[in-house]
Amino acid sequence: MRVSTKHTIDIAAWITLGTLLLYVAGWSYAQHWFGHFYLGLIHLDLPTEYHLMYGFWVLRDYLWGFVAVFVFAGLVVWGCRLPAVRSRWRMWAGRLRLGSPTASLRWGSLPLLATIFLSIHALGERSADHDFARHRDKGFDRYPWTRVWLAPYARIDPVLTNLAEDLAGGRYRLLLQSETSLFLIKPETRPKDKGNIPADQRQDNQAGIPTVQIPLRQVKAIRRIPINPGRE
Image 1 (tube, rainbow, N blue to C red):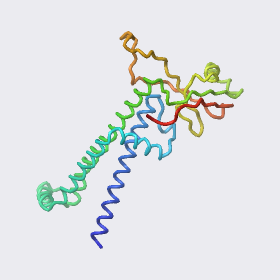
Image 2 (cartoon, rainbow, N blue to C red; image 1 turned 90 degrees about the vertical axis):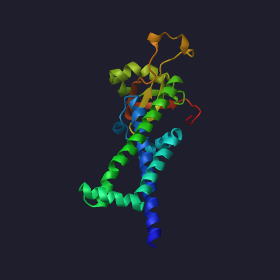
Image 3 (tube, rainbow, N blue to C red; image 1 turned 135 degrees about the vertical axis):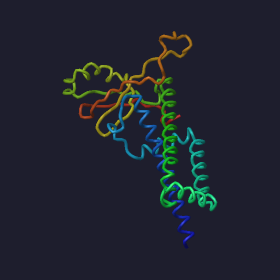
Image 4 (cartoon, rainbow, N blue to C red; image 1 turned 120 degrees about the vertical axis):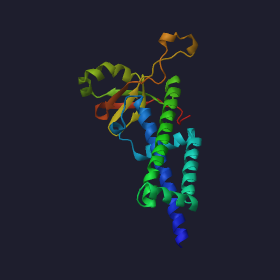
C-alpha cells in the first residue's frame, strides 16, 4: 500500500511539474509576443487557458527542449535516490554543516529548478520571436481585416477622429478582442522581392508594431472580413 501511494505521489508531482512548465512556456510566449505590439499581459487580462494553449505551441516548436528537461530532471531524481549518492550526500552535508540531509537536498535542488524554469522561459521567448518574424513577413495574413465604425460620441477623441476613415475602410487587422477593447494593427506593406530593398531601408523583423486600442463602448459596429482560420 505504501509503495502504491508513493508511486501515486510521484506521478502527481511529475504531472504538476509538467503543467507548471507548460504554463511558464505559454506565459513567456504571450509576454514576448504581445510585447512586440507594446502590450502588457496585465493590461490584456488573458484567461489562464490561453497561457496553456500558447504553452502547447511552444511544446510543438521545441519538443526536444521539453524532453531534454524531463530526462535531465528524471536522471537527477533517480540519481539522488541511489543509496551510494544519498550516503555521499549525507557525508558532505555533515562536513559542511548543512543541517539534515533531507533539508540540504531540498535546498540544493532549488538552483536546478530555477535553471529548468529559465530554460523553458527562454524557449517561449524564442518561439514568440520566431512566430512574430514569420507573421510579419506575411503581413499578418492570419489575422482578419476588420471594419470598425465608431459611435458618434467617440469622435470627440482627436486620435480616433483621425483614424475613423481607415477604421471604417477596413485597413486594420484585428489582433485581439478583450472583454473591454479592440486591439488593431496596421501591418506595413512589404514588397515580395526583399532582395531589391536597399540595405538602409530594410526593417528589423523583431521591431515592434504599434497597436490601436479602441474601447468597445466607443464602437458602433464591427465587421470582420473572413479568412482561413487556424495557425500555421
